[in-house]
Length: 348
Image 1 (spheres, rainbow, N blue to C red):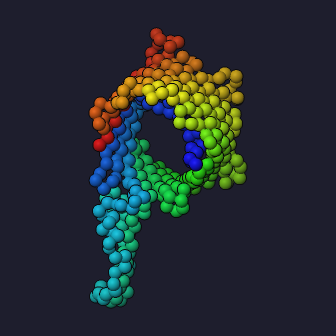
Image 2: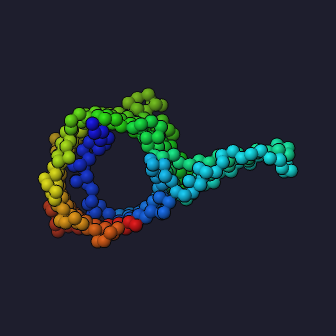
Image 3: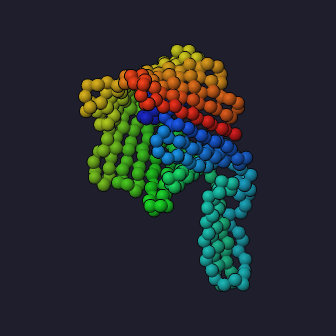
């Protein structure tokens, strides 16, 4: 049996068609991806908004594959002895603890050296990522340093644990979160814990059977001892088409979405949204995607307010992708409410 999607991905096919690869949302977007010989991937992003400053980030990510085959440095680390033999030394008694910072080439090395009188033991504790471990560090133009440590199928089969930390040197602000994902046939559950704020906890679960999906989400504030939010969703999903109905914001915001892969070249989708607190107005979006050839595609969408968007994506050469997009207010074509944007992605 296939594992159902996460609660936030129940309507993923329709949401991606309606929101992804529309490049007018930013004036310019640049992304450079590269991979070092030892498996560390680097991702540099820069975005120029239509209004506001330019934002950017630098991300380094290391994945230790489930095969357990690490870089040459990791293989050498496994061959090193963990505990050295005892020996005498004329050095005076001392205790030294050292910890090297993160290095994507050799990960982490911890060393403890202790001595008593003329005899001391040298203990070297080597930390090598176990198979299924992913370490990601990101630094952005807001001067925020984010670290993410993932353990996938390492603690238990089907369980993925994530530890996320954030540090802002300018304000000395710190954050720490723990996320748990558990996947089994016909079941996908998640738990998100904010350890420093609240603390708070968010849970969701999705049950699936022969294409039918039922999911629920809830939030809980430990300090207030109160439920902070709850949502529900039902869907029917197949590779060719899917339909979903979700009720979020404490069952006050309802949305119904539909996605259809017509053939290998054409995809179509629509989404209707109704906010019971805002009135009887229903928002509607429709979108379509057409693959022109194996290296390019075009997308178009329009909503009930008359905002139309167009996008074009082409693979110029292996590793170089260009995206162009524009949006138009069809009810006010003579006003300067239109937006255009471009995106370049380099991958090596």
